[in-house]
Image 1 (cartoon, rainbow, N blue to C red):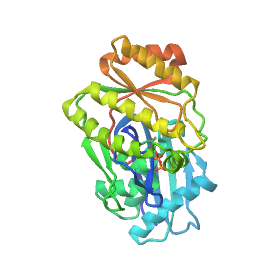
Image 2: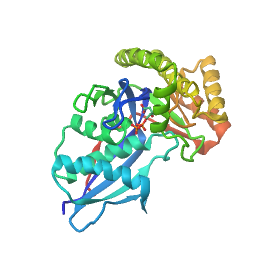
Image 3: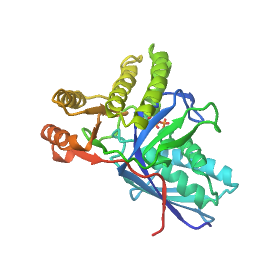
Image 4: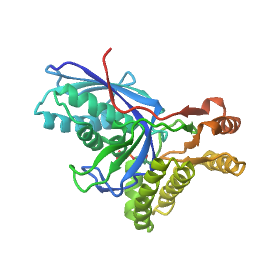
Length: 326
Ligand code: DP6
């Protein structure tokens, strides 16, 4: 039996999205992606490997997991056990501070925290790059949540070369992300299924890879230049192209609902009124609005008037993986 280890990781919002795999088993993506880690939404996970356990025992927000949830985590723990050369089962206790499966990417913070806690509990002392490669095996977007601030996932071509790295861990820029929760229920089509369908059937998939590759360089440069208009504009275009892949898949599908379109319209109106703000959307109906501090009040007020006070949350750049001692 090992000592218990607890880790915390925050979610990230992709500005240049990952939407498609080259290798499903190792989770090697079709393009490099770039994100901002957020301070408001995070996962705490405690792991202990224990001699007496006959199976992995996984609780999520106090509930014992069975079936699919349990299998996904156990498969991930197998990767850790292989690396560490141990065979004990683990108890995993996860508390999520993210609205689950509503497009606020809880799998990113979840697998980043699990990679940290499980590897250290198993006696491994991994570098952040190796932690990001491990987190990647659970969920692609988790690769970037090992790092704070602006982070990237280098697509690479195999397990070794596909890793996350920091672009600007401490963000000295007054960037804010206003998140609008339009639907708290779990999505019907997981990211995994959705991106698989887009790769296999969208006639525009090749154009996506090309434009996303260009967007990566543009956004990276915009961060270096503190050029908010370019960062926001390109991020919004990138998100809309990702969602266009889904509409152009066969069968066609979308994560948008009527409120999503309404929210996009409101953001465009704010922009026309002189407030620089841009939206991005993941695999769910919720929208996140990128803005700078002076525009936050106007954005929040308009979105609260449309969707209610409780639907609107303000986040800022957040930290990378940390270990917690109670
Ligand atoms: C739209 O990381 O959830 O949020 O690797 O299959 O677990 P799997 O997918 P996941 O997909 C995230 C997709 C996205 C864009 C992004 O975060 O880059």
